[in-house]
Image (cartoon, rainbow, N blue to C red; front, top):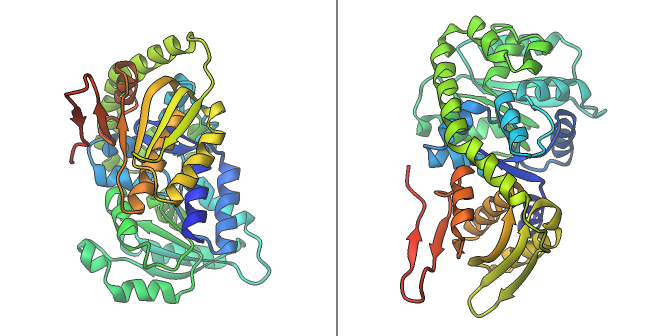
Length: 387
């Protein structure tokens, strides 16, 4: 895939920001089809499945957060995220559990030439080997062509060129990483450019589920949002994490989600204004005015793709903005990502106080360099904080 194709693919995604992270508006079946297509076409796809713990942790860890933004396909793997989305009017249709997608891929992949070739990297000692045995005797279209248990080695040790070479020599279609969320995402970010595997994902629980060392909750419990209780029953060590996440969720609701909902309701009462934009060549500035909401973004996406491909855009002026939604915020996150890949940086200017507050409630105010112009003389720069 060329650089131009990668930019277009990224910016055409239907993504929405929830708790500071961009999520693809997709279903379990669509995700399954997308991953299978990537394997068959040998197109790279970094597939990430944030849950509530991911989202909370990412707010205080910019490297972890960026690993999600840098992913190619991001799904909401947790009912609390779906509840938050519905509260804010964000159309994420359903929870997409990484473990469920893995099972669907196993059953639905059809290639007469060969089965899916999967490598397991990580997991408790002996678990990957047990998963290998289980898959070897089932009737799915999958075979395990490698499993590695790096233990508690350093990131450099786990990224040794010889290890990467061994993984590439397996000619795998799918690499499942299980090192704990933060270490797993970090390892993928560090090594994915050197890896030849089309689809890479950190799916920590998958190896345990396949091996049978941990039982998956019944479907009705998964859909009810009570899987966390089942997981605690199966793995009591998770109690502390879920307790922390529960408290953080309540705090998020009171300080971010509820006021965000109230702000969005007030904005919905404003008259609708068409989205307009223009580009100033002398300052590499894109000016946007009107309603920057999902239904109006199609032409803007096309313009942004062209500007990023030509490496012309450096500033987005939002002075004339009336309304914005989670789709526009997510688009800005992907625009900044692609501009950074090109070796440049993005500045947002002239956000009014209401939209600054909306960025704060959406947990993205520290992700952008935002420059205000309260007067022709004084500029106030709010640069991203470092974690």
